[in-house]
Length: 75
Image 1 (cartoon, rainbow, N blue to C red):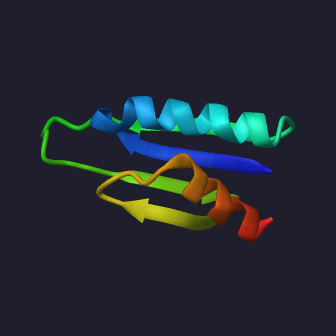
Image 2: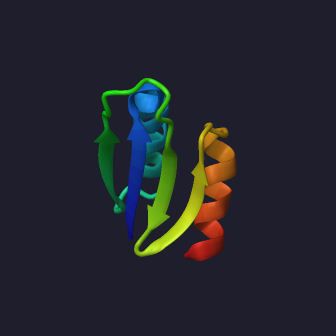
Image 3: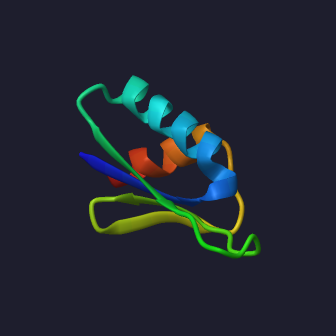
């Protein structure tokens, strides 16, 4: 399983935390972190994909457990 986390700069810590949580839950999972560091501070993105499916996309972050639950629904 490959999980891709796309995030803007203000969500860097959240993305790293989610990456660690995914690897803890599924040690054999691959996780790609893709930071989108734009020139404007108003740009905000937090998106999580499993394969080609976008399972979470928002201008804000939810807790890791909620996203882990969404991933479990897809696998």
